[in-house]
Length: 417
Image (cartoon, rainbow, N blue to C red):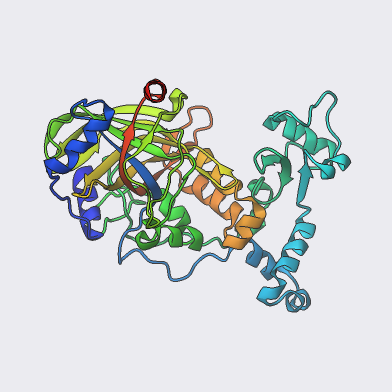
């Protein structure tokens, strides 16, 4: 069921597996020292998958700032009405909820009380952040590191459970169709139908956030395919032991972080055939068995940690039981899907790091998202608490051909010149 549902999802989006011309792929081996059967692709974007025409929301969630506006008296609503008053409304919101930002460095840090022996120049821990918060009037245990650990903040994004009133009326996706596959081999009450009518589709993350405009907009293929995501910390998929790119029952697939950022070519597209070196951290590398059938690669389930660094966000994605599905086009690019259980804390970490200001600008409700993913979580139950720690999800990705070499190979090449 997993294979049939995923195939129909790709075809519903107009993507049909294409034959791979051997002549195009021979060159992928040459820069790796001539090792046969090795092909690498760098991902240019990994984005939430949408379920086609039948996947729609009658109306989007309004976000934290507009929900706060609705809480005001008629007189105050009149005072803060209009787009030109959004900044003033945000200041009023910060004041009302007593949001705080404690600066750990620079001139603004002079008014902050630090624990004895704390070195403001050192990178603080979350325990130290909580201690700083307590010394400066934040609720006990509140306050989270933000802005690349240069500030301790208290807001509805850093501490969503403190502000349930901002989650009231949060709009979740109530549609019956979504992208994804049957991850648990069951057909449950909360499951979706696939775009082709297949049953048992597990994608509770979309159930939780599929009516948040920021996520729905960024997951539109026509936008996502032209957007670089995590450009300064990309991921490479490397295939080894490939005898035939159309049919091969035994392929080794390694998904790993690399050191070099993505670059653009003269047309503004992602530069293909660039060279990358693997990140040393073994947590950012995983190898799994795969197979190619009729030009489509699929893998066994595996736990993954993927880099996600975008502007001020540094929130590695922890996806458990992840399954990869990919097709390769004649021009050497790759497109596919990644299905699995996204851990709740690692997903919310990316929301928290948007900061309250970023959430307001994007019309995202931090408490709404947090409480929704907690509510719909359906994977990897914690034996102590009895609560699920992860949520089923479906992502699409695109990428281009790349070369993956060991750092020592780069050093040897440089020394020989």
